[in-house]
Length: 220
Image 1 (tube, rainbow, N blue to C red):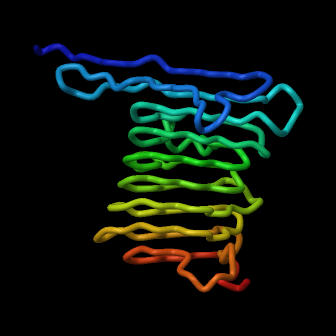
Image 2 (cartoon, rainbow, N blue to C red; image 1 turned 90 degrees about the vertical axis):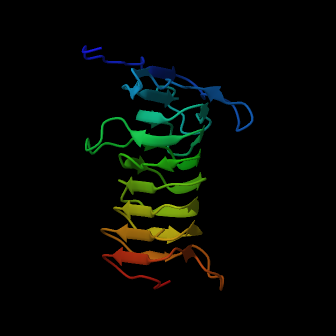
Image 3 (cartoon, helix red, strand yellow; image 1 turned 45 degrees about the vertical axis):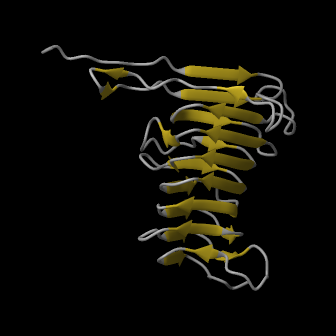
């Protein structure tokens, strides 16, 4: 129509000052900003900000259990370091402000279940001890900013690369991608990369697997 159109959808902020957001994986809070279009062109989605238990002085019991029915553009989600963020998304999760060098997801344990990617457009930055990602298809791209070490509990995708960069050491449980040209890259910029369990089974599967560490690889 000759007129420049701009579509936006409002951001969502959910704050639980004392306690959790959602109760369990079977009892989640739904947070979806929507996907606007104008004249058939995608607009700008609103960002999501979640915070649980940051003022109660207790490091346990302040979890986040949420789901989203569309792509998530994440400003930040923070729970206590001994708590869980468990997020189920029909779509993908990306950083709403890429390049800001701050954590998008902070919790002791992160469990992300997605259908089309994690950090596939803009890398997701985390501060966590234990990471699980179950993605149906597409790219997984995560950087962990903690120097305390990261355990890759179970990472799965198809038809997409898995790229993990960690400041601290990395323990590998199970990391798998399948499909032609689907590779795995794990980097520890200031630590080592080792097996989380001394079992004689494959820890990492991909067409090309690249491991880079400042310290040892497979030393323990």
